[in-house]
Amino acid sequence: MRSLFPHLLELLEEGSQGLPGVAPRRMFGCDALFAYGNIYALIWQDGRIGLRLPEPTVYAELLALEGAEPWRVMDGAKPMSHWVLVPESFHDEPEQLGKWVRRAYDFAAKAPPKKPKPAKKAAALAKGAGKAAASSARAAKAAPAAAARAKGKAAPKSVAAPPAKPSRAARKPATSSAEKAKRPTKRPARRRGGR
Image (cartoon, rainbow, N blue to C red; front, top):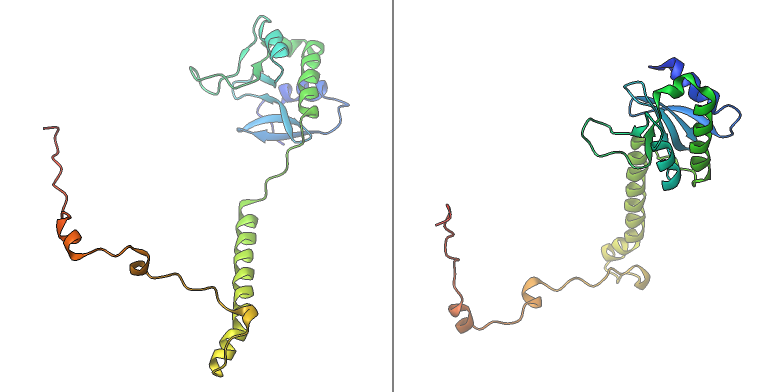
């Protein structure tokens, strides 16, 4: 994985060294680290390291440090929940950064693992295959009834089609011609322009 900020990725990987289930990936066009499929650290596009700390007290503890700030995707945007950009001084203090990286990792590792999403193309193909299978199953069930009708015999009861819906006229209550004459045929036209 080619990094935009290789020295910062190296710092994150050193802080995560020896931790099980860690995988580097790209997310939002940035380098990120995942623990068992859950993201816990990233390097934002402006060269800042962000950590995900879902526990409010731990989040507040890191945010209280000088130079730390909530992560915003854009200036003026609402902060991303649970994300803190660590102080830039941590870039020169690998021990301090490593302590916070491990805390973020602990939260991600304890969270239930994310299930991988199926590829869109594969899901669409599977969905289409399911429709085709259902269609062929319906055709197979209808075949004996069609054959029986062709011979002039009644269809087997196990394959009989469901009763047909009553027509729309049969579902509506009967209306006398006098009642119909009382109904207006057109709605009055709406005025436009607020008058």
